[in-house]
Length: 443
Image (cartoon, rainbow, N blue to C red; front, side):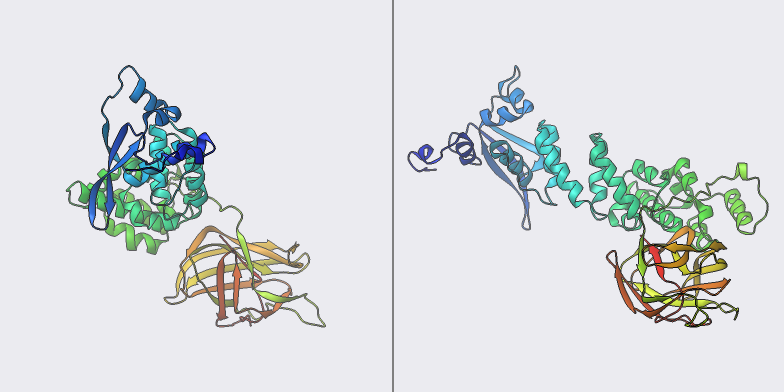
């Protein structure tokens, strides 16, 4: 290879001159041979390098080339990395620059740790933290755990806790190590229904049986999962229909455990101290959003209007969302000092299947954001709603005349989620344009 004569004179700094010889055979005294994958298959590529430059930034390369057991070969083949990733490691060692992408960052981080280049490792971790998502968290978390990197592991768990359903229903979840499945089911805070968590664990067990060449019957899956994983699933958080539809058919539980669950669902008194499964909710979501649906809110006034509940009919409305959410509860209109007895239910509007229900007595409080009296009906178990699916909200309310909404919006975007509202059965008069339900509380 020819080079321009007196090239050194055109580069005014040592940094520029070092960068000039990156991936350049000029003055090279060692070559690295690595695999390179393309659409046409895998081949070998060569990266020319300079021992002194590599040793200057990496204790591992220093020991490799100048230590007591120095490698004197002028060609080194590496089998644990690919061309693109090693090239970025070398680019950083020569220039303090690196081109990170979703396809190379994990391997660049691996090489930065292997060759003890902490400044590059930190750049990789900043990139990962910035780009963490449900789609890639399962490839990043095991690496953070392997290197005991708490600064990277904690953000991974935060993504998992907020977007659990997307994570556990991904193809990647079926391929994780058992230890990670164990960590999931033992978490006290997850944003997924217990039945979806169980279905994901069951899929993982079935795939693991296939990987080990075993028949995926209930007994084998239970042995693969282990007693600690099975006992950590909170079956009482499921409805009886969910339990019957998905858990029974898996044959993972014993006859005695199924009998205990049947007694639980039929409200037969049990010795709760010996109940085999936790009944504690997975925890509250942080900082839920509120989707307000009215442009105009009016007070309860005997002259201008009010919303009353003497008919004995429920208020209801149909709605859908354009992306999956967790519905935590629904805000209701009230009045100053008003106390209301409420029974609220969300159902699958297509199949009229109940998803969550909450009943109780509530006292109105002043909403500082929108300036009205209301109260929140929060579900004990937040319910996961799917995108582009019709749901119905129904509340039977008993109490004094309340504030109400007018000029309701048929479509509202809040926190990156678009809610669409349509008229329900309107037993007590609520429609998309007016009535009850000022805000939907979600994450």
